[in-house]
Image (cartoon, rainbow, N blue to C red; front, side, top):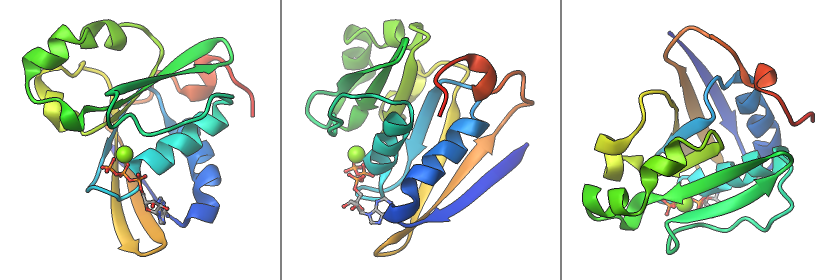
Length: 154
Ligand SMILES: Nc1ncnc2c1ncn2[C@@H]1O[C@H](COP(=O)(O)OP(=O)(O)OP(=O)(O)O)[C@@H](O)[C@H]1O
Ligand SMILES: [Mg+2]
């Protein structure tokens, strides 16, 4: 088990997103952190590095936003407004998890019981107005990594 720790301002967020993608072994990523800490901002940067041409917005009201990326798709969830496991289940959450597309999740604690076995977690905390710090837990041995997963090239 090892932890990648990065401290960054908004100016540096694209570089941070690249570094994260270099270290991921799972395409399912959970973002933990308080309201307004910068989960959506970081996911936006990740989607930019993944080369989406779609406009990225917060899925606060829609629960999920879908983005096209070259030869793939990404689903960005904000489960904040999900009030029960049943609601998430009826929403078809399992199909998304089984899709093999990128999954970025905010407020995953709302659907804890439905989460798949394999995912990675990024914990974000506020340092000051402009600065955030994140930890990426690598909770199992690398079997593969992002570069081996194919596409896209930066
Ligand atoms: N280093 C930074 N990284 C990310 N956001 C930052 C940073 N510095 C300042 N901010 C500001 O913090 C806010 C982060 O908002 P964002 O919507 O990304 O939070 P969130 O964690 O998704 O919140 P919510 O739980 O409500 O969805 C933005 O206003 C952004 O400009
Ligand atoms: Mg958000």
